[in-house]
Length: 43
Image (cartoon, rainbow, N blue to C red; front, side, top):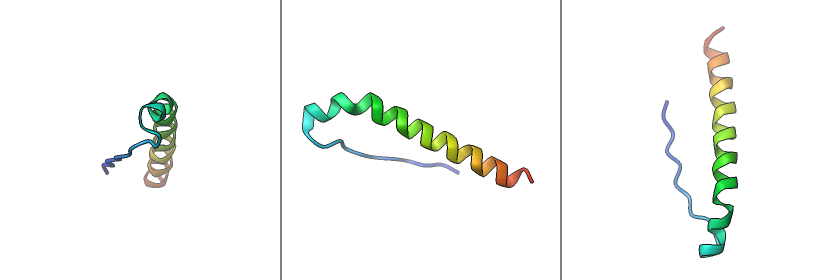
């Protein structure tokens, strides 16, 4: 499975200040999702 996420933060340059937080949250979301999927297929 492969996911491609494209996004643009609002507020132009000011929105880019939130980029590290957004990336961290996305990594956590996809890590959880990967874990859940692995759990399903390992049964």
